Image (cartoon, rainbow, N blue to C red; front, side):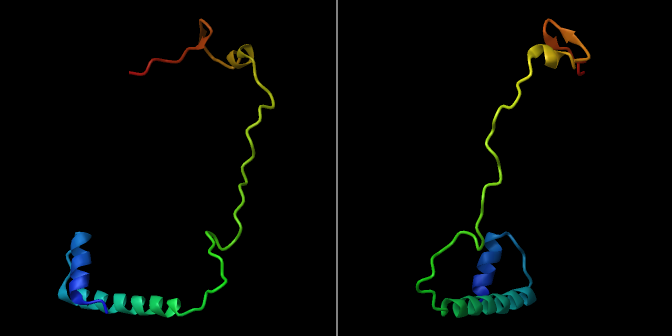
Length: 93
């Protein structure tokens, strides 16, 4: 059973200030959660393989492939301002 001291300890670790009513409430709620988890531990899982996901996960990303490589001249044609083969941009103050 989860006691009030356990709730106070966890609250202290989490830097929470709880009232006595909250401590009583959370103590009962956590006790119910622990009982539910213990109930799940009674399920027979022999022969069931552990799995990281309930459904198969596939990588939908494609491999990086260069399909067309632009030349420097093609790229610089889009530059509004060019200086010595580089993009010229306004100075930021």
